[in-house]
Amino acid sequence: MTQEMGYMALSDVLRLHEFTRGLTEAQIASLAAAASEACFEEDDIVLEEGERSRAFYLVTEGSVTVELRAPHYVVVVQAVESGQAFGWSALLDRQDTVFQVRAREHTRALRLEGEALKALCRQDPVLGVELLHRTLALVAGRVKATELRFAEMCGVRV
Image: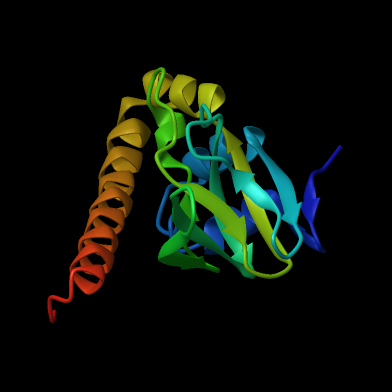
């Protein structure tokens, strides 16, 4: 049975997504086998702070916010839009999420199961290294966004 996202096969969606663009056809096929479609409605919590992240998401439509929760307020650290990704902690062993992720609007994404993704990276080290480099860019962007929010909260001009 062919998995489809809308009218487009998952492999086509992966081929066009900014995070996976440029991967080989074999790598796209491997990732498509581990992918499924996920849909979220406005204000749905996708990941809760402290939850074990089990999936890596590639946003294909809509957007989510990465939020830092405190007892009396929530700080939006970053918006993740179509063409971007979140859930990178699913690639790590025994890593709980630091941030909460909430849908800002109706959002569609490809969900890549963390365990399957880690297994693919071990089976295909070239794919693993490529995904590692791309994921490190996501992590660096999240750190930068967090630094900017923290500076803003402290009244530091950036």
